[in-house]
Length: 370
Image (cartoon, helix red, strand yellow):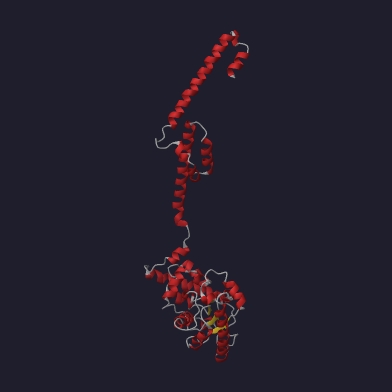
């Protein structure tokens, strides 16, 4: 087209058409030579890549997911270009990808130490700690909790229930007082979590959430588990966490055993190394004037041992019952229930409800007001 336009014009500078055509051809040939030189230079730069790295290898569709979206599309478009342009595009894509990956890795390395790993820290608790430092940490934690409880109980009307209580000290085990103790006995999916949370809403409440959870999906109706279950409940109601190694080990792997006790879990978040130590748990528990417990694995007849115990003079037991049809319907939607007879057999549930009722009637007559 260039030659055509030149030939159709008047010859510049008074030259004849033949002479003008010869000059135009020379100019076009010169420009073509310059383009060839530049193209050769670019070819040399692109072919400097390693001999084992070629566009036909890197244009493999399997590589596309590893590259950023824009670069992947660029490779696809470059597949139809001459080889020297495709090679340059692939080399540029690989270089940019390596740079981005390097940047991300460095960023992750810098931020790794800033990621909160509370749950992992607590579950990785170790006995290899500085006992002296822990003692100081425990003393500080207990002092803070004492101040919080004193503030929460300001203005509380002591003695309004007819008992011989005139101050917070009369209810605090640490000071020789007798706390108010309540035990909710029920079974799975009976509304006990809601009732427990209501009791736990009292700011001076220490909540023992399902202390027999480590027994798995079973109902304790008698030997061989009865003695172990009764011992665990008595120890916890007396704020004595010694001898409960299995319970504490289970709690390390299933932290929801403690998270329902909000006052305790706040301390666990602030002091992970103290959270599972029996001496710390016992001391912290003894600061609280209200002790609440929810139990879904112990039948009512076995609770009489708690009522007889002289170390628990004021423990009160509440039997919580739900329509068994609603209970069974709710259980079917829990992955831990099906396949466990004590949970998914309606005959056993109904038998437990009947036995609990008769036991409750008997105990209420024998231990009135409790």
